Length: 530
Image (cartoon, rainbow, N blue to C red; front, side):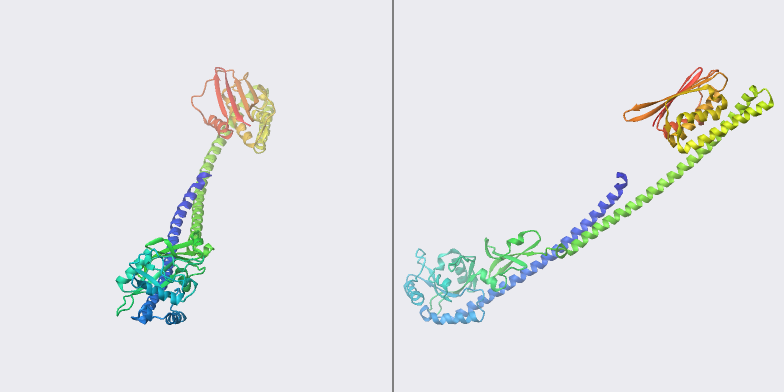
């Protein structure tokens, strides 16, 4: 059974391996396609953010032109507030938390600037923190709209913080809008805190004006919300600054959930307002595998189906080959059996003629007249015919061992079978055992008639059998013992009759046979399982 399954199993495994490679290739193609689409989406997000930063830069440049060369005292808060309000109404400040002016303050101007701050935003306002370096400060003098968050930042010296200080120096060097790294905005006075950044544009005070910075405070969460990425989307994003990778500028509300299985991830690094930002995207794929990986699933299903079909085809071919081989072997066995039957028929015919010849000689010696000879021969031939009928019926239906032996002896010896002595229990043989034992007893009796106990008057034949138990099985042990009048010599070669006996006992009955010759007899011991 294992051999029959061996070839189809190998064919199935080979086909499955080819299918697995194909499916893996398709899966990689689909993954690359999905990842490429996600990278394209990330590029679109980065482009929108870059465009928004460009708009904010334009607002700063326009504000610098609007303020011109006025000194701090020349910039009324009310006018600046109306200007910022107009920008907000036009949508130019979408995602920006106001617009401000941070003036460069030294020990000669700090009192005047602080006076202006208190006049515009209240007597409790001033320049802070007090421990900052007084040699140079950049104090927030204007910041509109004046909501609660922005009021908390009035008077703050942004030069006192390293990230802001680095961005302002870069703005002074470049002369254009410059974006800072991630910072904690001083406006973050509520539990809803967001990572921030500041975009600066330097005013050099040409014409006697007060130098300072036009700036826009950016709350990143608000900025991305204004761009439409604040809620739960199919695309979840995370944005970080390459110089501060541990600080998250923005992250979608459902981004952690998309770290589980069934998501596709992609990354993109690009320059935003002069800084290197890293955009990470995860898209939650469809829960249905067919929707998520249709080509992969179809390829896998086709591979499994093809593997099964190949295995079945190989199994069918192998079965056909085995059937043809078995048919050829059966034909060969039938030819061998046919040849054996022909030889057996020839052998039986010769034995029958020999028995008739022997019965004729025996009847002639015993008959006192021709009529007595004819009567004796007729009776003997009739007995042989009856015995032959019994043997033919027994070969298909089975028979009793004793009746089988008696029928064979009567067929061969006729009335002279009285010389045989049989002992043994009742044993019922099946059809196969009956046929094999019938042929065996026939050959032994014929040989005894020719060369052994039946060759001359006075010989004897003893047949006894017994049932032996070996574990849970039973075996029949039969002893055929001949005593002849004339000396008995073993044959020089094994004839067809001996070969036929060995075939019946060893092959048909799976038993053993042992022959032992002595000067005046032969003992044959036969054993086989019942």
